[in-house]
Length: 233
Ligand SMILES: Nc1ncnc2c1ncn2[C@@H]1O[C@H](COP(=O)(O)OP(=O)(O)OP(=O)(O)O)[C@@H](O)[C@H]1O
Ligand SMILES: [Mg+2]
Image 1 (tube, protein in one colour):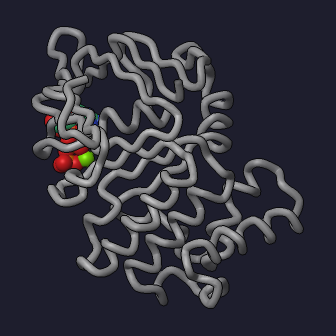
Image 2 (cartoon, rainbow, N blue to C red):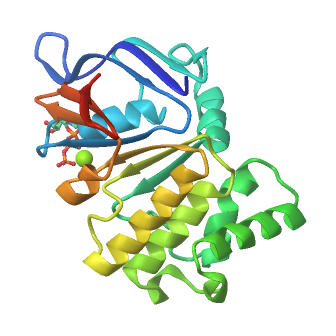
């Protein structure tokens, strides 16, 4: 199992006036799965993603990542799992503006203390895999939104993660660039990595073999599709 969450919750606010962003939730994600998360604004999708990505800590419950309990780990151990095992893509790209496309994609390899030669080779290969070999030296501001998101995908893949988390990766893109980005993400999954994608786009969700639907900080439904049609998990 890549992810195994048990009674995992997230509350904000004070103890006497808590706001439950995520009610106790149990969830497994297997290697190579492709999961879409849908739900209204404020239903807790990003809260759940940030917990799955070890960017945030649950208020209660447990979270195993590749079999290892994470809730008692310190910040450095969590950062190391994020760096080595998880790729992130966000709606707003989150590229460093003063670094070239190549520099941005090299960053996770720098954190992992790869040699200069290795990180250059791997970053170039990652940018090639998203069709941006011609833009290695470009700054983010000189790239289109779709190109910036492809740089973000290359950065997310540079360390060859087991899990790719994408929170509305096509939300800021026109339909053509969005389709390109989605095709890349689906290709990442076909090459065996687990993908969790948050989307408001019903067409994107409809392509996913598993759809988790959130409402008011809880999973309202979790449906797996087979060739025969919908199955309930
Ligand atoms: N840091 C925070 N402090 C207090 N409340 C928060 C915080 N982060 C999120 N929330 C609240 O938790 C709830 C769930 O937020 P979340 O960002 O997970 O929603 P979402 O489903 O991702 O929405 P959207 O589709 O708009 O991105 C919201 O009501 C939000 O206001
Ligand atoms: Mg969100």
